[in-house]
Length: 135
Image 1 (cartoon, one colour):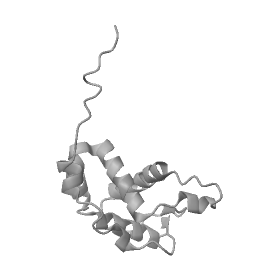
Image 2 (cartoon, rainbow, N blue to C red):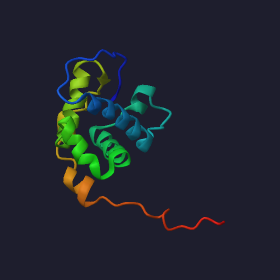
Image 3 (spheres, one colour):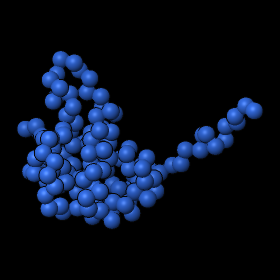
Image 4 (spheres, one colour):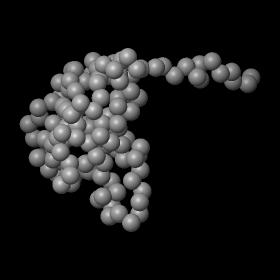
C-alpha cells in the first residue's frame, strides 16, 4: 500500500482516527521494512504488503497506546486485523491509497490475535528505570 494524493474525506465505516492511524502505521511499516533497493521505482520501494502494514500497526499501537490498544481499537470499531484491511481497501476505493495487483483483503485476515499481541504478550520496558545516572 502507498499514499495517494486525493485527500477528500468520503463517508467512513470506522472512526476517523483509525484512518489517520493507518497512514501513520504505513509510515512505520515503510521505516521497518526500508525497501531501499535503489533499482526499484520509487512507487515500488514505498509499497508494503498487508502483513508488513499490520506489523507497522502492531509496533505503532504499542508505542502510542500500550495496554490501552484494544480499548482504543474497540472505540474505533476495529476488532481484528481484517478490519485494518477493510479500511485500507475502503481508502483504495476512494483514491486515498494505492495497491498493486498482488494486494488482497485476505492478506489482512487473522495475521495476529489482538488479545495475544496487545495484552498477553505486552511487556513494560523497565531497563531505564533501574539504570543509574552518574551524578
